[in-house]
Image 1: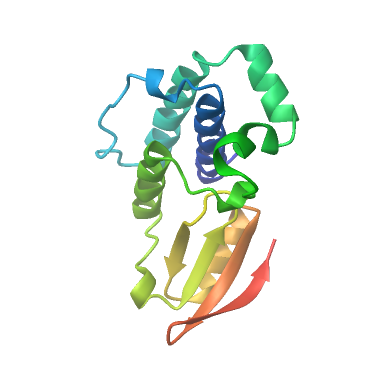
Image 2: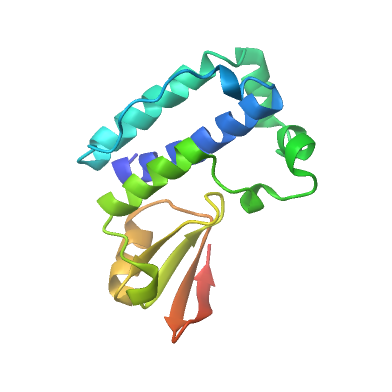
Length: 164
């Protein structure tokens, strides 16, 4: 698996683990807060996030992880988020920190200055931004980032180009 695809999927897994810990009322037991601001590459990024997921999984029994991963996401989101769909739940703070670094490493651009947007279903409300369609499509073709929606921004109005 390509490191960008791996990093993307690891952020999704980290979001699930935080929500699962929250469901088990164990999210406050996490005692790590290491500096991730100096991550310089996607390889380093993937290694850091993988270590954090493994750390989190120490607080969730393996049988519970398997049950929650194989079951409907509502099992662990309904208690704290009601009828919100998985994609409507914002990233927990730690996962958002990782996404911000991912966005910087990917050269994700700025929303107000970019013509194209790649919005990620499971990493709501986050996107990568691109100045040209070719750059966006090059990333989509090279990586497994689905589910996503690609938009063209026209003077503050977002028009969906396609989704996968």
